[in-house]
Image (cartoon, rainbow, N blue to C red; front, side, top):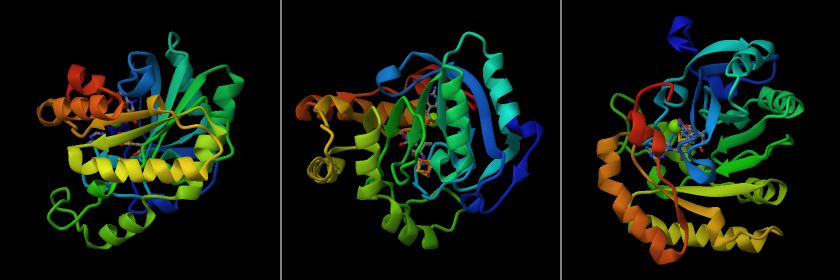
Length: 261
Ligand SMILES: C[S@@+](CC[C@H](N)C(=O)[O-])C[C@H]1O[C@@H](n2cnc3c(N)ncnc32)[C@H](O)[C@@H]1O
Ligand SMILES: Nc1nc2[nH]cc(C(=O)O)c2c(=O)[nH]1
Ligand code: SF4
Ligand SMILES: [Mg+2]
C-alpha cells in the first residue's frame, strides 16, 4: 500500500490508544531481510509511532516524523491476504506494541494460520500470540544527542526520554520467557560490546528461560549500502569473536533504502 496515497500526519502517535484500527505507515510484501528467518517471503505491516527515538532509525517516518494512513483491521487483513503466496507476516514499526490493537491483529493472524514475527524494541510485553519475538534492545549508542540526531530535529527532550526508557528489564524478561525469540543488537563497532554483554548477563540472571548465544544476533548499523559497507565486516568479526550470530540486512543489499522493501 503506497501510504503516500492517503497521508495522515500526527505529531504524537505514541499516545494513540485503542480502537478498531492502526496507524499504518506502509504494508508490502518482501523478503524478511534480518534475523534467523532472513530470506523468507513475508508481508510487512509497519505501524507508525514509537516510544523511543534512535538517532539512526531507518524508519524516520514512523518515529521522528510519524506519517500514516489509519486502517481498520478488516482492511489490513484483506491487504495481507491479497499476497496469496506469503504465509509469514512481520509486524513492525515504529514500535508496534505501543498500540493495543496490535494484539487484535496478531490474534486474527494466528486464527488464520499465519506465522507472525514481531519486530520490537523490547519495552512492551504483550499478551498476544507471537511466533517469533524479534527483540532489538537499544544500546546507549542509539541515543540521540545534539551532535548525533537526524537533520532538522530537536533531539533535546528525546535524549533524556530515550535514555530513560530504552531498557526495561521486566519487559525483556517477560518477552524471552513467553515467546520464541531472537535478540538482535544493532552494532557499529567494539564500543557496543561491553553493554551488550552486561545486558545479556542481567537478562540471563533475571529470566527463567535459557538465552543461548545462538539466540543473540549482531546486526550492522546502516540504513544504506554505503553505511553498511562501513560496518558489516567489523560486526561480522565481533560475532565470530564472541560466539554470537551475525545477521545481514538483506533488503539493504538488495534494494538499498527504498521504501516498501
Ligand atoms: C525500525 S525498527 C522497528 C521495530 C522496533 N521499533 C525496533 O526498534 O526493534 C526495525 C529494526 O530495524 C533496526 N534498525 C533501525 N535502524 C537501523 C539502522 N540504521 N541500522 C541497523 N538496524 C536498524 C531496529 O533495531 C530493528 O531491529
Ligand atoms: N525486508 C525487510 N526485512 C525486515 N526485517 C525487519 C524489518 C523492519 O523494519 O522491522 C525489515 C524491513 O524493513 N524490510
Ligand atoms: S525503537 Fe525502532 S522504530 Fe523506534 S526509533 Fe528506534 S529503531 Fe526506530
Ligand atoms: Mg526495516
